Length: 317
Ligand code: TXA
Ligand code: MG
Image (cartoon, rainbow, N blue to C red; front, top):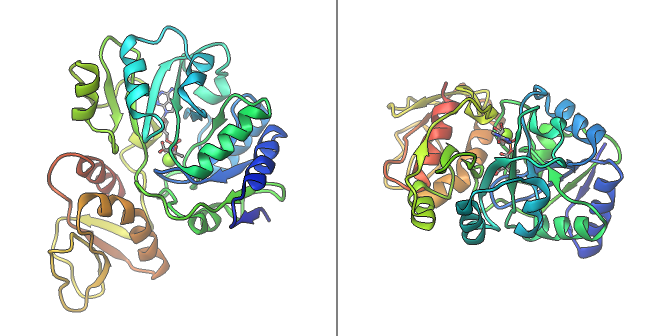
């Protein structure tokens, strides 16, 4: 049984940082989703992330650092626009894929010559990472704290439901409340002359091109992004998009769409931010209620709506 910490005091975060340095796993909140962390320099600890998640070993992990000062430890030859992006959007829901330094082992990068780096923006994540640096650590490798292919957890209880059976005695789950953004970070490939979005998130194309002055492209490259598998982020219930729900179906749609008789309303967000924040909890609730089918009406529009459509389409695949 892992340890569940509902009160993340400074001393709890110092303990958790020591646990990471000693090779333990610590699940922690970020502003996007909960992550399952290990010392990114410890091959054995990182190997345990893969076994707890049931994730294939060639899928790379994101290295979480306390501030952009740590970027140079993990990256080599970063283009100038990376510094602009880091300055404007870190701490925040953005992962930069850059050429790796010697510090980033194959066991973190899935054997690729790039590494994903992010400075998260959540008081518990920041407190943990700062304590980790003070204790001599350099980065915390952390995928979303779910079993491979499942919906990412946005609460500590969802982490316990997902991973409770797989974590070991000394491992910890830090409770920092519900995640504010609710969908995973924007992943940007920064290995070319201009940025390319590998996974949409709260940091949008428009924001990236405004800060960098560059034309931003979208879509997969030869780089492996596990979240870019067609089927991912999926609950047990069958997810159907933009259809008419029948009695007994779960239903996700913005607040201005009424709930047909007999349909189980799982989410009625007033705006796209609320949609993103509530989506994964609504999909989890569908499974908790044992629903066979969930109908979701996709948000139209730009901004984070694009990330919501991306996750809905993978959940429905
Ligand atoms: O919001 C987030 O990004 C959350 C929180 C915990 O930070 N993390 C997260 O991690 O979503 P994960 O492992 O579930 O998804 C990270 C994605 C994976 O699809 C992985 O393939 C991709 O990032 N990734 C990591 N390093 C990469 C690299 N060097 N090149 C390309 N993709 C990379
Ligand atoms: Mg994930």
